[in-house]
Image (cartoon, rainbow, N blue to C red; front, top):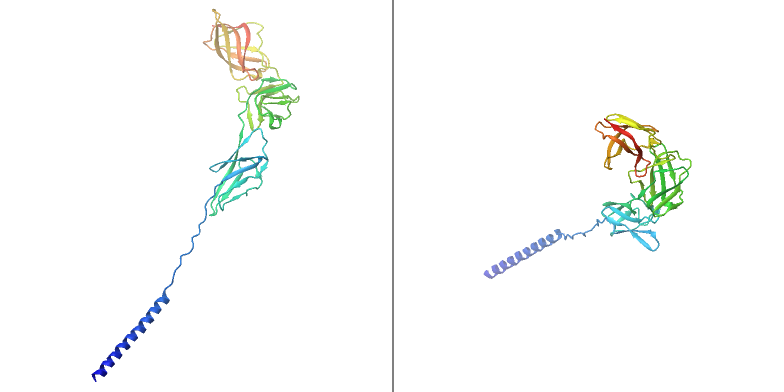
Length: 331
């Protein structure tokens, strides 16, 4: 009886173990079904390079490539003055990986300052580069004569590019009424520009403006005007003595006084010891044929030998006219 109970108990024990094993197996299977294996995605790199590596110009010479200096957002092209520049060019532009440029490399564009190129990086960012032409030419240094006759030769001396095709001269009237263009020359050298004054130019005072090489400039000296078609301002010796008291005025006759420059003059006289004495006086009025001067209240006394005036048409800008002691200043 006891043996039967023992066997029965063992059977119950093993049955319980089997049931537990079945339940445990079921639970493990469900756990594995509910789990997922997550695989990380791939990383994509987008480039942001929007600069230029190089900017080359093949139009400069068949055997020579001219490269621009890339400084920040500027494309600096140093062009020699002796070489004619093209109207357009097709630059060879090198860029970083996956960058593009508009206009595209090799596209014909105007060869002038201000032409722009936009570089776009792969990430969409852009950068604009601007062309800047720098011509290797020194500033014009030139002087011109002060008076010239219609139809006569005219020479301008200075430092120039010896190319008539790169030279133009303009005569601009001071009153702005007329501009005469000179484009035909007898000679254009490194030191001289020569041509004839047109016969039909209106006699008057003119400024000279010159285009030579890549520069266009006015005369860079104070006496920058040219008298065309008239004679130089002249003040002859008075026919008789002119006695003038301090604080009063006197008048001298002459020709072409319309070209007077400024409102000052200088009286110059001799001292008893042989030296000279001078004083500045005012020009109070002038016409084509006369000038009126004011003598200060504290003016020097005595005979005046010279009268110095200033004019647009006198070489050097001023001239001393011989009065032969005929201007006498008294109390």
